[in-house]
Amino acid sequence: MAKVATNNNFAEILATDKPVMVDFWAVWCGPCRMLSPTVDDIATKYADKIEVAKCNVDDCQDIAIKYGIRSIPTLIFFKNGEPVQRTVGVVSASEIERILESLI
Image (cartoon, rainbow, N blue to C red; front, side):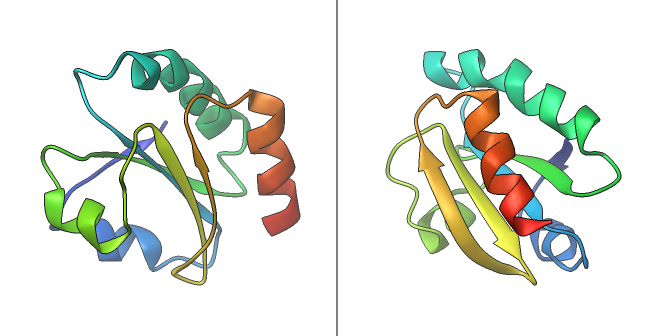
């Protein structure tokens, strides 16, 4: 299951040896709601290999600004706490898995 990222725990979420995928989203965003089940499935499928977090951009505006989130949904993939890849918009599970496999 995906963790809920907040201003208080975001750095802690990134401070892992595993790759991290963060879903930047908002409640009012239709495409975000479309992508959400895929993100949840990925979180379950890769639970032993990666960390998955969801970051509501309305609740975490400072984080969204720091990572240059201009459109949502945006997925940012982190390795060693640093962003290494991103997708914008609704993407397929196979595309997400291709990126994750390159990071594991």
